[in-house]
Image: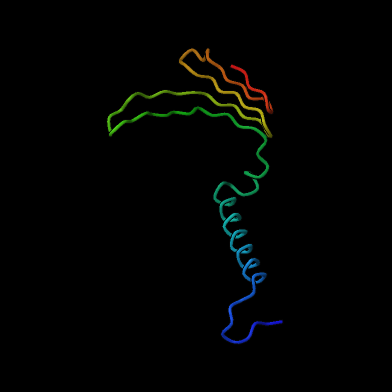
Length: 95
């Protein structure tokens, strides 16, 4: 049944419109991340560089190495010698 002229749409119509809008935003995000290549990502490795600032003054920079494997395995190596390692394997963590 259609709402009368001038009446506000039903809650179900509004929910469907919100769902379509959300799906559109998610689809655009996936495309921006690489589309199918992003969706089929199985593992990655990277060198992460970061800096610390306080009130515009640099407080130091560092680098760490990150290895990730779908769905829930991650390894991060810290310090120049990469001798501080944090491993997450499912719901377990090790340092």
